[in-house]
Image (cartoon, rainbow, N blue to C red; front, top):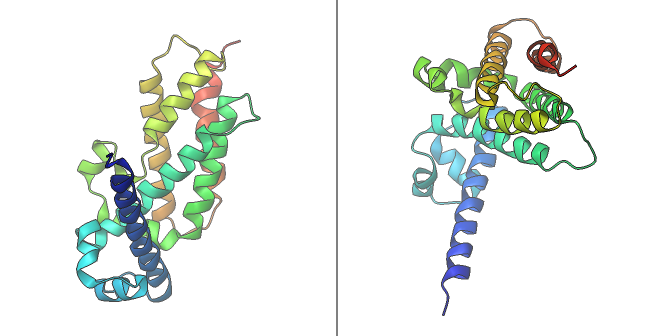
Length: 201
């Protein structure tokens, strides 16, 4: 008798509980602020026992970090699965636009992640609180090289790291700026800046 369906159900249950905690935390952070929100309030909002929180998040800060990982993962998977478009650079720009729209909805929380939860070591390691795009960008760049949109002789990982660094720089500037400006324009501008000059003629 196989235990695979039981294990699969257990994993699904864990994922659902983590999502409930995350959504509850996000709701409370938006309503009353990060500092005013307690773990007890989060678990009550999620309809779970208080101890459950620590099975999924070691600290309240970890919820903020998960926000980046979750959004980048969700949007990256959606972008890679896109059909009906031949251009990988076009897909990359769509990813940047979708991410900008998501971040703009929660600017205050995203800014808090970079003020509170992201260290210089995280940035140097390419993690940046879960906001790094490098693995997804590297895949899209390799696709673009196969399609001859980008010079295939260039190293895709180096290009992805450069684009990721420029994107994170713009994200941090946006978080620190007192001015409201469209993040999508900055993000897609990075794609043009880095990739247009290396397009195959």
